[in-house]
Image (cartoon, rainbow, N blue to C red; front, side, top):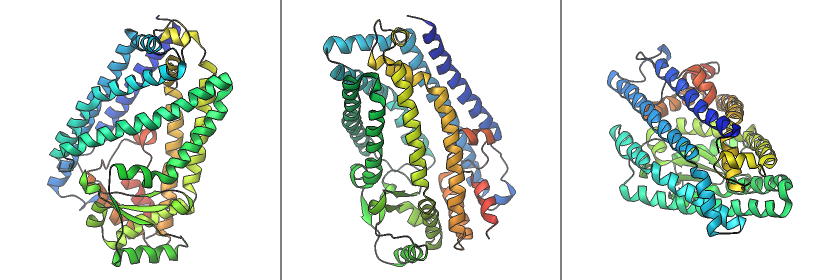
Length: 411
């Protein structure tokens, strides 16, 4: 069972854990007890102490959860747990599709059950301690059940379609599977706010008044056709604020968290939305979708090369080539490449954020955007001085200080 691929997989799992914790330790050391000069007056002494404490608590909690999940994976590898589950699945179902669906259903469910205590602690202890949590026990359980239902139904249908293509086309299935996955992603992107969000949150059209008038006035000024502005009840779960752009073409809509409306001035909200419109104007959504497509093509092509490998199956505790074992092994072996592509995608995303900021600033909203970003950072107790390497690896957005420095040019 312990062949050369097995040891490579273990090396990647352990290596990823060590690398992530090394970066986390750098990030801990970078946390400054003294506010940077540009942010003086942003926090009072007590509030900044809360921010530092929140960061340290989350950092320690991240270490615990990462160690726990890594040990679970290693335990499954060394005890042949994946191979045992594969044998059990195919003993219950002779056909590939039901056996594979059962394999990943059990894996998904057991993994989620084992991590529920950590989700619970994060929500009802850490987030509650720092005044963020508004989630009730009932909402937590309902969200978990809905996410299971959604994951099992949607994930199951998508996996079943891929398996059917594999049975039909063999290892050359990958290019058709790419088309199916990309089409599914675009469908979800277009209808996410209409189909998925209502399962968890209530969305209502932004009522007539000063804010809606200001947003529509800016949209007309920027040459952006906007019909759909919605408010989401984010305060149902957290005091943290946000806004996002959803959908494509005629389905595009702007969604504001009710907490954002409570915390920011009208001009600051318009500036935040101007930033989101900047993404649309620069075609960042299509650009990132193109990158995602290329990533999907690469992943499916490489997967097609190893699906019939008996070596991968043996490394996972099996005895014969197996689709589910090959898929799990591939996911673990893909980790280094995923890290590298992730770094590149994050770098592109950070560049896009600067462009969207510049778009908002070109309409004279630099000061308002800086004010809004400051308030959002204070409200969420964001880490103001993260390690530069940590940012390059994990951050999809520039830091507050970096964005402020760039926006200062337009003031």
